[in-house]
Image 1: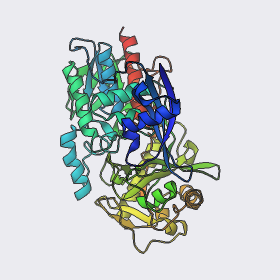
Image 2: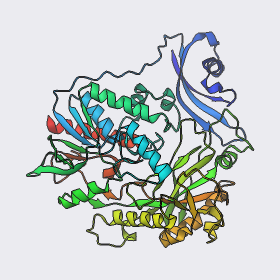
Image 3: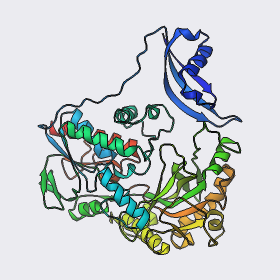
Image 4: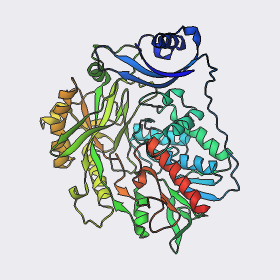
Length: 518
């Protein structure tokens, strides 16, 4: 007999991870003797901090007098070196999972990544953090694994209707992630672990006969009578295939410009713009766990805040408990910030993007200008760079000072390694965004005790929340309406928002490519 039950487990001594403790709790819940239970599988685990005492709520599958065999996670891909080729531009989650699914279907993926592999990429990230020097082809956004590799690996998603989320999570586990991501309500891998997992996925692709090329930047699509024939690289090399999955990410501005130059239809798309806000983690823990000090058996707490201000949503985004603010510019003379956390989330700060939606009508330019949102985004980033004074020093302001329109006399110690400079952020942010943030932050403080404080710093600008351009595609075939065999994919094309949704979109594009090639 197999029963599914929910139990409550106190966060003491990591009881939620102890099989014997779970067996005793399950036996009590089912009113049976513990020895009748042959095995327990945890299905879901979440923290409930709504009451006076914080507890874990756990959904268990209990095997009673039943053979229990723990699930194993392995990969066994077929040899596709002689399969039909599919070009995949971009080695982020959309591109990598598109490649894996191509292999599962007998197609040969050829991944073209403009950046470097994870090991070489580390040197360029060190130059960004220590010297303030940006390599436009190798940075936090470009390189093996895409933007997710060195910016956290949060796997929480609402995209459950687009595909099999659990299959994506199991693929990560098969390549080295812990099984915790299969059960946690907000799964997270951590920047310190992701590079090894991404490398393992690449090895699976190569071992199956796929190809992965680094420093391979696409400069043009080869199109003949409305059909894709391949791509040309900046090196001058041409690679031919009848299917191209375009999974270049939300920061590949030159790809959008290339499409526009080749008269391939693209559209301006709304995105969100604001700042990254950092608090001492202990402030967030006190507010969310209702205690003076977080115990050793509870993880650093997170938050999710939304407020409507003048008919426009102001919301927290990509919250990183125990995290670090990272410089994510892809060009010189611009400032872009994002956040990430290591697997243990053990840094002393908590940060989150806090942004306002930017609609098409908010930005000057004709309705027929597909690059107007991109140029607007780029202009804000350049103003932020100028305000910081160079070397990726970011403009910053204490929270209460920002709301009170005061330049901060000094800034708190924070996690942004290139450094921060006290600046009036209203000189960078558009007035309508600035004013909505000023009204939203005290309201957030009324929702979460301690949030509204001058111990918090606002760092500008958080501008790469999603792509400012959409590459249209047919809903059924997933192909571009003008170019047969071109599959716009993932965040860069406007069809995903995070690692899991991008991976699912890559899988779906690979399935669509098989239909075309069949």
